[in-house]
Every structure is written in C-alpha cells, then in structure tokens.
Length: 155
Image (cartoon, rainbow, N blue to C red; front, side, top):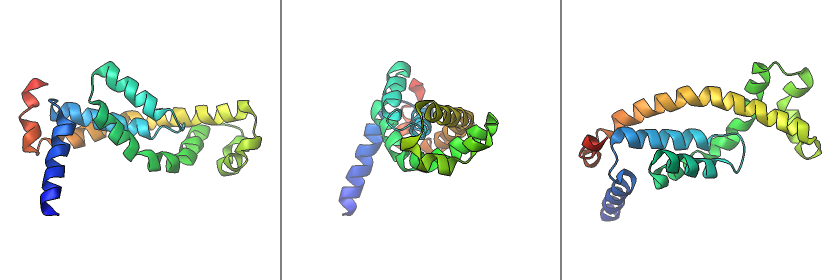
C-alpha cells in the first residue's frame, strides 16, 4: 500500500506540473477552484477548459480543481444569490432566496435570470480576491515540492 501511494504521489506531481512553474500551477488551481464555485450549474467545466486553453494553463489541473469545488458550488448558490440580492438591493420578494429557490420550477424565466445575475455578481466580487489569495498561498506550498522547484526557471 505504501509503495502504491509513493507511485501515485510521484505520478500526480508529474501530471500536475507538466513543465510549469509552481506559480503558474498555483494560478491554474486557484482559477479552477474559483470557476468551479460559479453559481450556475453546467458552466464551470466549459469555462475552465476555455480559460485553460486561452491562457495556456494545465488543462487536467484546472479541471481537477474545478471538480474538487463542485460540492462547494452547490453549497454556495443560496449565499451568492442572497449576497447579490443585497448588493443590488432587490425587492423584499426577491430577497427571500430559500423560498424562491424552492419554487424554482414555477418561477418565470425573468425571475430566474434575475436570481442568476445576482448570484454571478456576488461570485465575481468574491472570486477575484479569492483567486489572488489562493494563488499566493498555493505558490508558497508548491515551492516546497522539489519536483516543481526544478521547473521554476521556465516561468
């Protein structure tokens, strides 16, 4: 069992690094996790792939972080809708998010779009500083991995 862990750990480090520096890998993981928390179901996977290809980031790493964030995505939908409602000072009928989300099938498209817009606004305001903080923290952590430090000169 110990040998399998060592092989898996070595393989994961090689798979995740793929010749990129710890800072770039940290940015990749932070973007994947933040995009994975996007409060619209079904969009993060495609968005992560687009971002990874556009910025030439590690596609498997960004998707792994995206999938790791999926449970958090579901847990944060209601708080993001509430925060977004507070930010745009929505009417009191829209502020009762839990009640509105429980009646989701019977709501009109405009109301659902309004809730999604509020949630996206809140996500955007939270995601930007979260990405910066996660990138800094992960960079420090990843620089302690010897296999990744060797690729640092390429960044």
